[in-house]
Image (cartoon, rainbow, N blue to C red; front, side, top):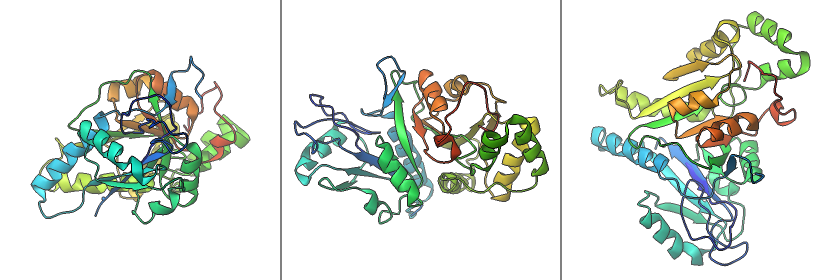
Amino acid sequence: MSLDPVQVMKGQEPTAIPTPTTSNGDSKGSWDSSKDVYEHKGSTKKPRSAPVRRARKVEGGIFFALDAVNTKLRELYPESEELFDIVLVTYNHAHVGIRLINTINYHNLFIERFCMTGGSSPIGYLKAWHTNLYLSADAEKVKEALAEGIAAATMFMPEKQTEVSETQLRVAFDGDAVLFSDESERIFKAHGLDKFFEHERENENTLLDHGPLKGFLELLGKLQKKFYAKGHRLDCPIRTYLVTARSAASSGIRALKTLRAWGLETDEALFLAGAPKGPMLEKIRPHIYFDDQMFHVEGAAEMGTVAAHVPYGIAQKHPHKKSSNPSK
């Protein structure tokens, strides 16, 4: 998992990750210009009134949850190296390293790998780190990573974050253009709701193509199975959710059949039939929620959820309007 520092806010004191943003008094070289969080497992504008802002301070919940997962994995598999591994990547120069280390130690975060690029783009390092998930507050870098085939999303933080578990990692995903391709969304945008339902009925047994975060769900599932193998299915420290505006009766079955054919599952699936996602996310309290539409990212933030925008698919050209789209 790779974390990118964020845009510099002069005068701020150093905080720390999810997308920490702090300044050391320099202009672009300060320790924020870009910190990205990537997670690899397996070896592992806002107007002032808006409820959402780019992540730029340390929120410890997800880090404590990741640490809890790693601790239990080490207990069950002492010789295994399949763990969450966080790499902190920053535009800062090496001279900022001492301050960065002190900040990480102050917040008691288990981050031992960093990459200080001295102003260069960090994207070229992602494949070298075998990155499975790249998180950043810089939308352009996220798009660049996605273009390279790396799962990536732009993180946003709510003004007031809902309290989350420190012992169970909870990750929630939208379906279309996140886990799946944007095929169905394209039908809706081009031909409307009735054609969308017709298309889904006719293609109920045709698998959806994969989306940019399918591989990340696969890795979460791989770690879950390690706990299941030791009798920890009911108390597994990783829990996943599918939260989609699809209707279960008319279009949800195709999504479930696709996951089953891939050999994947989510612990819970919520088919909202166009209802707002925010209240459900408030109930779930995930550490992070992934969606391809800013409309839903903002709705999640209003309910105190850390949300990540996946800038992928047709929705980026045709933003969500108030009329609900049941494929989302």
